[in-house]
Amino acid sequence: MKKFLLINLSLLSLVACSDENNDIYGKVDPKNKVFYSYDFAAANTSNKLTKKSYQVDKNNDLLISYTETPKLQTEALRNFITSNGISTILPPQNTTGAYMVGRKAIFNDTVLEYEPYNLEQRTVFKLTYQLKKIDLSGLDVSDYIGYFLRQATSSSFISDVTLDIIKGILFASQDKFPAGATCWQKQVQLSSQDYIESYPTQNLSHVSVGSSIIRQDIWQNAAWTAFTPNTEFNLADTRIRHQSREYWGFYHTTREVNPIAPINELACDFFNESAFNSANNVLSRVFK
Image (cartoon, rainbow, N blue to C red; front, top):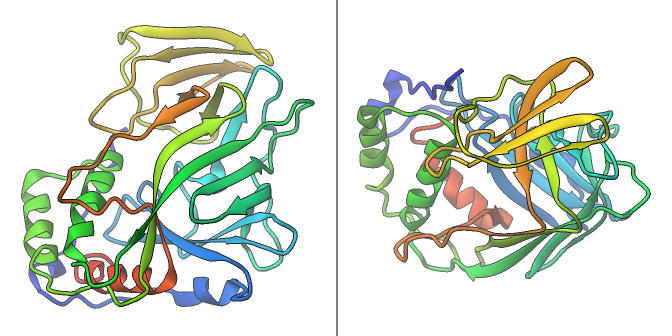
């Protein structure tokens, strides 16, 4: 089923009211490394923008807190299938409500790495994201907006008219990132073996079963077929049949290079707090 991002009439005003829930900021320990991002697919039935904070705690666990209850295609709801194991549970939550997504986690200026918390198998399974650190000091926040909109439109279906309204409001911003503002761009995703990212409880939008088949196999009694991915939208590309059920996910190889963003875009996937606050100040003119 196609997902729609509905924009309220308040878009026509240059300043929109925001009922943002800031509890997310009270759940993290400032003594530990904290970074921030947006969850595009999790909020697609309103103009609310779900925000996420990531933290590597003192036990080297990767924790994620959300401003809205996770509902669709996000780390808190993600399962894994490999040739050696299959997730049987979702990531657990700690006493503050944060999701324990990874163990043995590392985050620095060049890498985010962890072992998924909800996958048990004999061989170690590790996800590694090679990062590029970007100094945003003094740069226009609107330079990030183009990348943000490309990410949003690949995860949600937005009409051209609505998109033009959003662009007209957001690109008019004269805001700049403050000194010390930093973001990190995902450049390469590595994994210790091929895997399927799956969402058994969800009805994901997916490619046509008439698409070309690139691989099929049976892992852990789960029969799966990977089709050619859609290059425009973030559609599930892998059909999974397991325990008399059919659901969809995404097939990943051990090395995947992210597309290079246009030269006039700031491709930021994670932010430090000052950069994230600056982006929110602009985005809140459209999104709650």
